Image 1: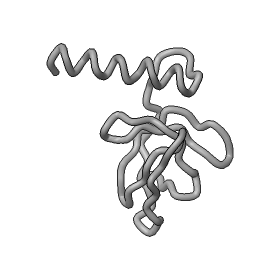
Image 2: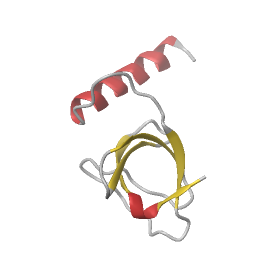
Image 3: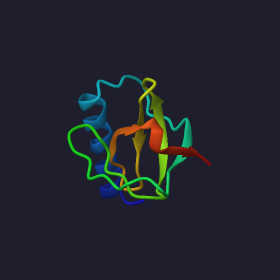
Image 4: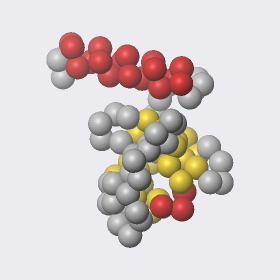
Length: 87
């Protein structure tokens, strides 16, 4: 990873911590897959756009309805638990 990519990731992580009021280090708890039968959603606000079959990194289990996740493009957002499957 180049220095430029590293700085870009650090900036994205800082923005995530500010936007979601997340304290501490960002660590991946587990990985989960978006249900292939689920409808694709565009996202927006604090919600993560969903693609069928996509593997997401789980950052935090926030409540009974949503999970805080990161996708392969290092974007963060909430995902409904109903569309997530364990690997």
